[in-house]
View (cartoon, rainbow, N blue to C red):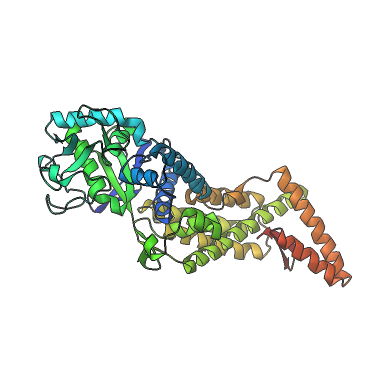
Length: 481
């Protein structure tokens, strides 16, 4: 039974999707005027793990994430670069996919863009005007906050308490009230524009998510996610402009991820602590970055530093080494069992018990509002125990080892980690193993002949190729660095 912290109610609630076996989930995507940065990664990876765990639990997840490809920031950046907003969006959307594919993020069911749904937004705004929830002023249209009784229920702010700090704000002097927000912006010279009943212009920032969420997922939806900074005004305004028209709840569970800081300070270009995903993955393996990002529960703040990344690097190496050890034992056991069938022993029972504990603790942690650090700790505890058992070289059946591999594969799928390590052996990988084994034999022969120069050269050249040799009591084994 999954429990989700609902920002709307400020408490954990048992998750019950509107339609049995199906989850309809919408997550706010980036404004595509610049390269994706670590703050984007914090949110996107968090909701990727949530989506993956819902699928692990058997749900069919319809996952929609938008791209904001028209707003003040888009227009300003396009003008600075002497290009069009369309070309700017194309460039950074392509870069977005490259960055997040690298981080192992699953593609959404759909990636609608704001400019592809202008007509639907106009129709939505027209209906709000007809119901007096919106009004026209000098070619722009604003939502009348005073008309919507429940405004502020998500952010817990009273009407008039705070004027929206909007990334796509309208003209203050045109508004009936400072907190009213823009739905349609009248055209300014040199800006992209579309025809509307109020003249040429373009949509405001908030309206796109209400319209595209409804078009692709219907109403209400199960989960709406985004960063904590979107609670007000963006998500508050989404609720107002959606529920004013439908008369029913827009979203059943509101989820928001915590902020990311860099060395305890807010990430910003002016402070020189601003990192793009491209920059950070050039320095650290993408799986290291991903492990770092999920090492904190999604609602908690997370602080980025080289020390934290180095710790994640060490933790990931331990996981990889454990999987390598397991796969090696499985290969060897299969060879032995082909010669002499082995019956399950007390060691098998010990591993099965540890595996059962892992599954229980993993699911309990993830069921409790997707508590990834506790789930990762349960994985670490199991791998430590498994390593200890396998290092004794006691007899273990291939069936037990195969089951462990299957469970680790399922958990790795949720975390989005060690996926390359879990691939079935291909013919190429078999050739690699055979060649390395041949070199190990040549090295061992050189060592017996006290030709240590040749033995060291074989070891060092393999290391340069990313292959590490480890001399154990039972012989020499290899692994990828």
